[in-house]
Image 1 (tube, rainbow, N blue to C red):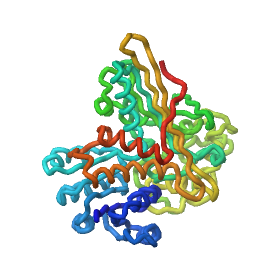
Image 2: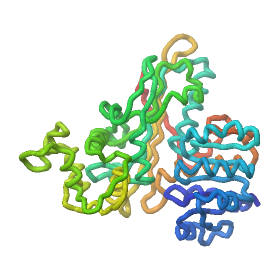
Image 3: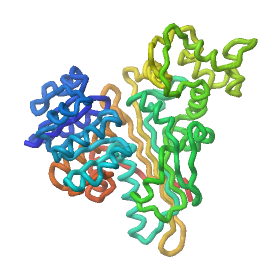
Length: 440
């Protein structure tokens, strides 16, 4: 028997767990703080067991991971480095779906020295986006082409019929993760120039994207696109940009939240504070209703959709915030988590688009757009759970079967991972289709 230890029993673990247990020669240990949820997930599965883990106790981590042939961490990203240290001590490969942090990157040499694979960014975005990008770029270059521009946009969203709230968004993953991710500075290359922008500046001019069957969306830059130039083999590209997709109006609303100080990270005491008290303190005193003064601060009209979104969240209400010590980011995340939830019978979707502009070997210009549009199943697996969990599970299977010989801190861009995982995803209905080119 081969043993896989999964750390974390959150929203994306179920498809991953079920995939691994399709093989009778694999046993899975599901280790988490939420032991009750883990027990529900492994119930009636003879090759699976639930364990409780304290991720802050390094000795406990090592004991839990002992005897594993592969570890998959779905814990919060800031805990992966501790897990990686334990895996290096045990010489056990690790797979995560999170971005490579500086702390993880610093482990590369030691991982190579110990012959251990630390495979990161093996979910959807990041993950499937990397694999599909490099495979398409390889197709273009094999035919003698040179990619001039690469733009990639991805979003996990409610399906159109399930998006009927003013924000047109609902959570299928960590609300705090969404909030904190919105604060990251961004870097990309456009027309040969490196562009660096801080939050919330890059929310000022989102790009319009239209997806058949979904409608208009907006895209804004995501993190540091420059670090993928080498991974993708795009050294000659004049434009490289990775972005996030949302329904229209998202960027304006987040600029408003920033203006109200709700994305700050400084802890404070909220005892006795109402939501409207917090807003009152951030708009000019004077005559007129709070909504009127807020509209002036945001340079908009009282009936603007940004105001409607803030009102719908209850930010202008007399409701107590109901926290003691917490950061504004935390109270906002908890409010969003309460309000932006999927109701029974609703489903999510994932949209991932890659746009390529390239020069052909004969000197003519070409363009391609490929699109993944995946819908979740109401009452069952979300599209996000499928597209995050399955790539990690498929990578794990290839590690167990020794089809992957990589060591060190890696992404799933190698041909031993990208191509076979994309092919296997397609057999499960997760595949890209060609679309009319959107860049030239």
